[in-house]
Image (cartoon, rainbow, N blue to C red; front, side):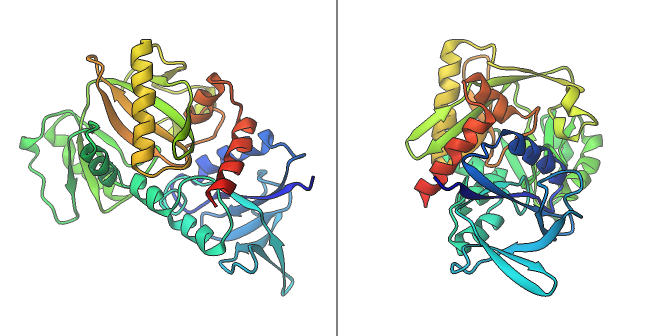
Amino acid sequence: MARLKLGIIFGGVSEEHPVSLKSVREVAKSLDLDKYEPFYIGITEDGLWRLCDNGPDENWETNSRAAVLSPDRGVHGLVVLEDGKYDTIRLDVVLPVLHGKLGEDGAIQGLFELSGIPYVGCDIPSSALCMDKSLTYRVVSAAGIPTPNFQIVLPDDQVDGDLLNYPVFVKPARSGSSYGVTKVSGKQELAEALETARKYDWKVLIEEGVVASEIGCSILGNDDDLFAGEPDRVALSSGFFRIHQEASPETGSENSAFICPADISEESREAVQKTAKAIYRLVGCRGLARVDLFLKEDGTVVLNEVNTLPGLTSYSRYPRMMKAAGLSLGDLVDRWVPLALAAK
């Protein structure tokens, strides 16, 4: 059988560019080259598109050629530019390994839709919905699933710090990997926290600090045919979970430990997986997503957030939870690709 021509897009112009580089290198190590002919397309931090001749190695920006994904369905793939000439490469399917803005918010998915190329992961509406935490909360809470209490702060809004029940979390409405997030213990910290969040988004949330265990659940599948990995628990010694911003997360977190499978009761495990699947369907996810939850002492499961293109690094939670359920990263790619073709 001919190998599937698989376009793998990584990098991007968001603050999560470095995380994407780590993710794509794990994918490259796990890919079955008997099944796939990979074409690695890196997007620089300046937004330049490069076809990487030697894959996503350390020198990918220089060992590469200019190439773009064409929105022309007649091309159905890449336009490669070199020496004043161009060539085309037809792709069978695209795997985006992009995190954050313009990778996880529906923007790149719009280009995939225009191109007519099947792609792994969530579509435009679900990507955009899940990227904005306030919209996600509204949809999920309307279905009767608990979410944190929150308020939206727009650029000209004034916040009365005396009216808040501390601690609270101040965060960009549309960002990932805890960039721009501050845990605020009193009103004297509020102004600086708002300024930090606004570096990443003009729309900011002030969210209650939920007293509960932080539980994650990895989901795989389309529609009603969903598979949940083993839930994990984030054990914090201080602060809040922000591993992607640490100096050397590959060797362990500064304030977090990960227990997978989570040390929770079987009843709680079933409740977490059931709630995660319900949220996944509610917001229209397909292919894959990681649903982060809070588990209260009374057994109540509360949504934290939905990550539609979660990290795939050596220390990331999604692949760890799936590995605990018996699926390697290579196995996941082998499942994501047929799901993308089926969605098409």
